[in-house]
Image (tube, rainbow over all chains, first blue to last red; front, side, top):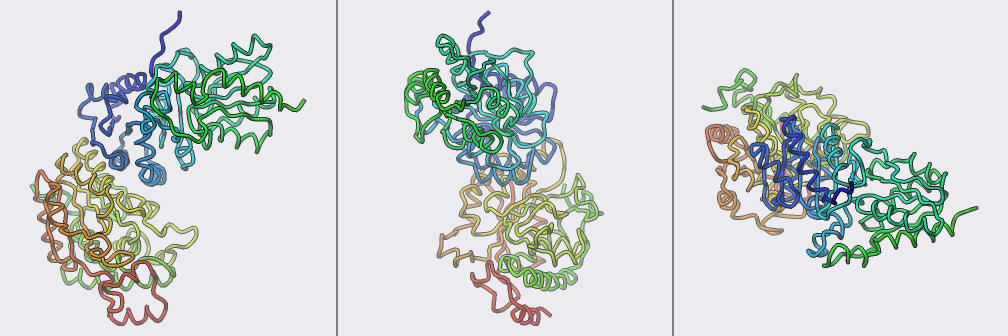
Length: 315
Length: 281
């Protein structure tokens, strides 16, 4: 049975409530966007463990850090742009340098935010979060995976950044699939090239694989849900087995998943790499579908990148 | 009920005279520590001596031999560059051997250039300004949720009030009526590149904090009696956070450093140290 697409922010909000029922130490902080991040589900169930600190992201992070010292697992929530860009020094110092148990969960990653335009479409978060010591970075692929990720980051001590989507994402995983931080999942086996993708781009990669099948190209697709720590073994194995890699992310091409994969390849197993991502540009208003096409984030763009990378393969 | 009655057995019982003697010792220790390190921040350390001394010697509940004691009052040092006065205070109160002050700013040492929680007694790594108050509020909210009675103190610089994040935090503390939060502003009126009123005027500072919903006290920050009285008033103030605007002198106690921005972030050399120590006998 085909399940209907659901935004990953919904799964986060629902799972937080489920966890809140069994874990009295979960506290949620919002920068007045709990309606959008779905942290409001938690607010409704546990008003005593929820604080809306107003439109003050620096304060959201600093207060979260302080609260965490009292034994709480603190979820700091907002839009990805505001949480990561606006409060960066607080994330760096208060959360990462002090290595506190704060989970940053941000909705509205990428151009699929849609009509609100560039100021609300975060395309830098993977880059600026993954460069921080102690920080782990996750971008769940669907509603089922975001729930598992929410459970895992609650149980695992230390700073995490997790990006959720405003746009509905197709359900690609099953309840019984493993979710381990830093261990990527193979979504489709293949021999000719590997697409390493995260978030909404995993479904685009699977669609690209179907298109390429008709042209006799057998594509491996990997869901790299953890951008840091990156799964080195999966990247090296994929390079060794297929000899060509394409990365795909709803993020700037610089600094994000593609860069993380490139860092691994050049150090451990040099092989041809093509990147699909936003090319040093801001977003704009439009429907998610229009914007995905405009910024070259569709299955057809992955198809083209795969063909290019295969041409560059060493025989 | 005043916090004075809670765990008072751990509170300092130094006499005013003893604290005044200690103030001179602290200043000497600060300058010697800085000279040995060859770099660091004397101006704001010397201006905050009485603030830290009265906190640790009179006001807070703490156990130097058990720095992570659950019910301790928390002292957050938002002006993280005044590590010399913080480390000297902690060493003099027995958190770690005074001998270790010689390792300040040295590679491999616990005594990092800006305050670090590797040092027993330090709660929070700082060094970037405008971070302490939000963190203090977070601790205070957590304490309230857990029905803990300890207090949270946040020592801030004056120039730091130019950071917008301070005012975000000021609103939060007032909104949530965090009357167990006490901010102390070391108002020495000099920042790195000159007088605060020339660089970006903070005045009317008292009015600003009052307008943000705080109980505001303005005192002589070098008077231990005045500091004690202000802390007592904080302890009995309800429904509002308290800010103590402590009027101080940058570089206090050393004539050639007093009021000089040049001594914000520069260590004395051997001769300067000798001259300073002579004034602090």
